Image (cartoon, rainbow, N blue to C red; front, side, top):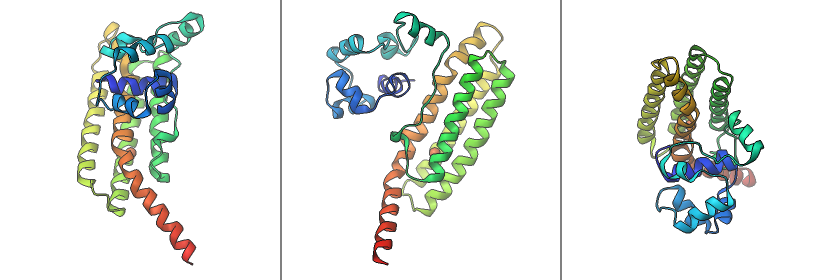
Length: 233
Ligand SMILES: [Fe+2]
């Protein structure tokens, strides 16, 4: 997770499981200001950082640098949770693109990443994890191809840009797979697997939230036209 904004979004969606407006209320700032922070259009003020400290369990060092754990251990329950790494991506309304096939594909990609994290938590070996990453890679190729066909059919104006982004995302996933594949047994491997979930989540969010949500207005327009056509009949 390379920026403060991305880590803020990661913490809100994965750690706190809150909507943007809810997190803005906790931080005592407007929803627009909060959105600017998540999109790295602004940096959090000292007041906002203090609210993070007093109102949430976020680890400020992690928020600012990306190093260490996302949350501070508060009490035994949270500690236990952290040790068990009970963390997974949950499907939320804010992820809906508005096309049944695309949304279902995204849900499946989420479930594959959650499975990889569960396998890491269970201490399964590198070969098993690599096998799951291969499944993720394979389905990502299927999904990207399907998405590009859909984009052609709706005359999506950023089709070429989107195709380039798909290529980059596939390359990134291949790099992650190679990184896991070349991890030496012991501490090196452990360290790579520990951050794998974060890396994969960031990778998926880059695709789903930064790129695919741009298609939402096309699907909404399509839906509205269908409603209008039906009402004229
Ligand atoms: Fe997608």
